[in-house]
Each structure stands twice: as structure tokens, then as C-alpha cells.
Length: 143
Image 1 (spheres, rainbow, N blue to C red):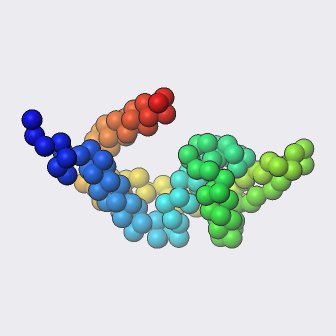
Image 2: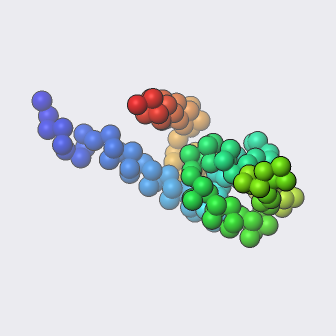
């Protein structure tokens, strides 16, 4: 049997290199709309679901409050969203897009296709890769 400790046999190494390559491509594209990748996925969750609480957003993005709060502060500083405490329960913070945040979606619409092109993959390749990644994430969550 081949030596399983060789780098070229390691799934984790391939995923690590893939992650770096994808993030490098996103970084260049997202500079055009002045967002980091974590800010971009936050905006996507808000574009998709509208107003949410910090906890709801954290669950969707797999981010804890300690990571999400400074990220939201920066997006609020860019006038893309507002954070307001619930009148019913002050522990709950609601996140809502501003008009500027809603308008940014138009500029971001082309990003998925730019990523497909940058990675030289077609849509079906990306869907297969995503399905496999989702399967691994789901199965890991059951451990």
C-alpha cells in the first residue's frame, strides 16, 4: 500500500490549497465592491433573508458572535446595514440592510460567474464540488 502520509495522498492538503486558491480569486474580485469574503457572505445572507438577528445570522454563516459582531460593525461603518436592539428583549440585536446595502446586490450579481471563470470551471463542475463539500460538512456535523 502506498505511504498514506505523502502530501499528494492527503485530502486535507488538497482542500487547504483549494481554499487558498478560491479565497485569492474572491479577494481580487471583492476589492471592486470594497468587501472582504466574510463581509460578502454576510451580505449574501442578508440579501437572501432580509432582516435577521445576530444569532440567526451566525447560525447561517457558522460564525460565533465574537467573530460576527466586529464584522457587522465594519459593515455598519460602510453604511450597508444597521444594528438595532429589540425593544422586547435588549439582548437581541436585529440586522437590517440599508438602501445602500440593498443596492450593492446589483454590483455583486456578476461575482459568481467571475469566480467560475477565474477557476476555469463550468457551472456543473462547481455544483458537483459544492454537493460534495456540503455532504462532508453535513456528515461532520453528525459526529
